[in-house]
Image 1 (tube, rainbow, N blue to C red):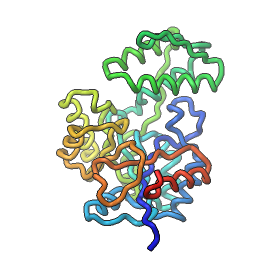
Image 2: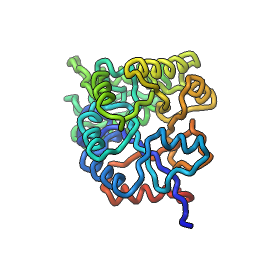
Image 3: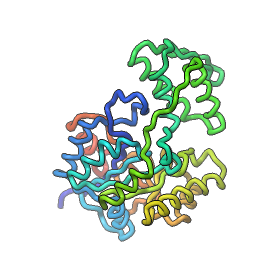
Length: 310
């Protein structure tokens, strides 16, 4: 009998041009790479819906060998423009996790706002105090700007919510120089979510909280409301059950897991890399972050997640 290979859940965020200035660059997979990856998965792998995978786990069955599940976090507008047409053409199912509080006007998440501030500034450098350190980032080239964006976002990920807002404000003050910079729309709107929901059953919709906080960094009442309100808003808007949750930043503990379970979700996804096999806790589903890489590298990455090889 051939070795069994566990199922892999892939995570995408933005499908766009890698130099798109209003989106955090590490979240982008190019349209060309995404198309090649989806064509490969459609022809060489079994694409399952997240629901199909979870029911395999609940029935204690092995998912089909070499199967994959496609997921998108954050619900970028370019899902509608770039990813959805490719998925529809290939008949590939996916789950799109919505940050419901951003769907009214397409407001960006804070990491995308940092990308816009840095890319749009006329300043030649950024001088900012972070904790007890004074840091200077040169901004004279696209390479320098990307380095600044990535380093700022990685540093800010370590801040509490109370610390984060003042840190972002310091970046704004340093880079705007009195200029008015209106945040660009990068998120889907409810009207587009509704259009997708009406057009196809290929896309299912999961909850990713209302405002995308680190749920370990807020009080239990706030965490509970973020989880409950995102599920409620999706179900009211679409008229269908919302059964799946994605932990913001992939972080959780037993308290957060219990809140998610209590609100009637069937499963939740993390950012912990790994594959899925019988016995996997459905509220700790591991995922593989899809790389912005050519097809051969993408295939090699998937091969690493064969059982026992990661």
